[in-house]
Length: 438
Image 1: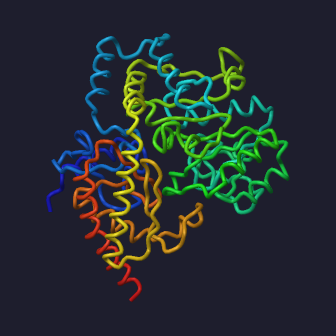
Image 2 (image 1 turned 45 degrees about the vertical axis):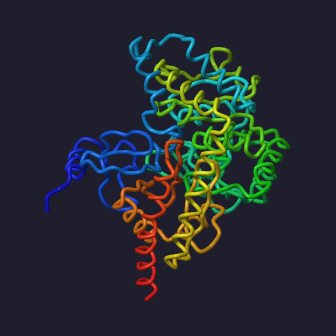
Image 3 (image 1 turned 90 degrees about the horizontal axis):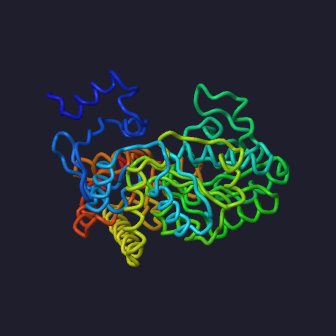
C-alpha cells in the first residue's frame, strides 16, 4: 500500500530528529499511528501535507485562543519583521507587553520575559529559593512544569516521599529537594509542611491541571494551599502557562480569587510565538538581575516579533468584553453535545471536565480528581475514539492525559460537526468496550 505524504515525512524525520519530532507527544506514540504533518492553518482549521483539513482543538497546545493566523496578529508580525527580527537590546515593545500583563493579572507587579514555560518555572523556583533562603520545593503528582531537572520527578507515595528522577540523566541529588504530593489532597500537603515547613521555599501548582487531562481543583482547595504556604512563610507559585488568559482574562487566579506570590505564564502571552514569563510581587521580582543578584538571562528574550504577537493577541482578548462569555459558551455547548452523543451510543465510561476555553473527557466511570484517578482511565477506549475522530477531520490531542482547547474562531458549524463525528467515535469505543467485556 502506498504511503501517505505524512507517513513518508515521518519516516524521513526519524532519520534526523529523535523520534521524528521536537516534542515527544507529537509522535502519536500514546495513541499509535502516524502524526499528520501540518502544512498550514487558518481560523479553527489545520491542513496537512496530504491536503486533509481538520477542525483543530489542540491550537498549538493552547496559544491560539483567537484562532490560527488571525489577520491582526499576522499583520502586526509582518510589520515587526520588516523592522528586524531581533536586536539583543531594549525595545518599547517589551515594556508595552509587561504593562499589559501587569494590568490584566493584578498579582503581577513586575514581570520578566523568557522564551518557554520551562524557562519560566525554572527561573521562578530559583527566585523562590533565593527569596526564602530555603531549598525544598513541593510539586504535585501529574502536574507538569517543564523538563528542567528539579521538577522532572515521579509521583511519590506518602506525604514525605522524596522525588525519584523521571528521566535518565537527572541526578538523584537534584531531585532530593523536591517533594511530591497529591492534587486536591489538603491533608497530605499539611502533613508535608508540618514535618518540613521550615525548609520549603515554595509550592508550585497548576491551579487547573492540564497535563494529566483536565483536572479541576475541588472547592476551597486552592485557598487551602494559599493558607498553608502563607502560614509557613513559603511562596505560592501558580504555573499558569496553560491557564493564563484561557480560563479567564486574569487566569485561574482571577477565576478562583487566589493571589499567588509568583505566576508563570506562556502560550497565549506570545500569540503563538515562543514567549513565556514569570512575575509577581515587586519585592520578590526586584531580586532578579540586574536589579538584584538572582541571575537569569536570555539572548532572544523579549524579541520584537514575540512581543508584537503577544501584544496583538492580548489586545484582541482584553478589549472585547464578550470574548470570554462567548468562548465559554462555545465550550459548554460542545461538551454538552459530546455528552449527549455518548449517552445516545450507550457509552457510560466518561467524565467531562471544562472551564473557560479548556475542556477534557476521561474514559472512566469514576470521578477524576488527581493523578491516580486519572490513570484509571481506559486508554484503549480513548485511542479508539481519538482515531475515529481524526478520520472524520477532528484533531484532538493524541493522549488521554492532555487538555483540549476552544478558540474564538470555532464556529457553530464546527461544533455541530464535531458533535456529529463523536457519535461514530463513541460507537466504536462502545464496541471495543463490549468486546473486552465479552
